Length: 232
Length: 108
Image 1 (cartoon, each protein chain N blue to C red):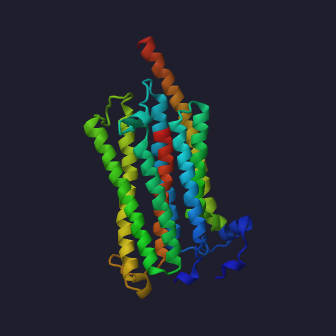
Image 2 (tube, one colour):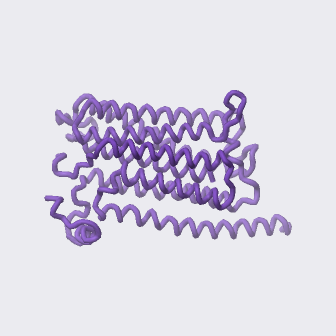
């Protein structure tokens, strides 16, 4: 199938969907399925964030001030949301390195691709580490639990642990898969056609772009959590 | 296998630019909190920076800008429809708050 002869834009949209053939032309099934999975994940995170906004808007008790709760003392000066800001920049950087890893993957540049995958995993692990620090601080030192906290409305803790926990789980799973992918790339599995341990199938650098979609999605979700949970 | 599919290979400069822009937008949204903007201006700025970042990530990092409309429409319309859900739940929470305030204050 030659992509360049296909109609583009809205004509292409009508053509692809009306062709009585596979809809997503020029796209591997793995990539299409990752997109569909991410769409379903979007619904889950949307439900979590919408329930946060509903809970917050419907409580008669005042909501805890996030910039105070998540503030840090640096040399005696309290800076609002400092840790969250650092986490945001680390996660965005990991998205940047991932995009570059995907680029090198398409160029079949084995070493640079593996190095940037490792950098991405490193940033992801740092993010999870900072989140663990944040949770410890809130649970142990400030007594925040899913059913109460010293700052205001009780619902705050439940939403906080559910939403950041679910996101942190996604990051953790991403880091694990990034490490697996980095190993595969470094070993040259996608060049030698070595079969996967679980799938027993050959794979290639397309897998890196699919991995990238997942990782960028994790960053994308954090953009919304940062806005609605920490800044709102 | 790779040669059959569309390659999403772009200049590295594109990604570095978007990376930089994401840093700038994140810095701006942090400043919204740091400078203590309140009320409508706060929420407007937060949403503008949030959507700008989301658009950059999806369009460039996730390559949607270069994809065919067949997949772009499948993804963006359901996501847009979530706004309807937001609207419904906003109305619902207003009502819940109203009844709570009414019964807490009226006393039964």
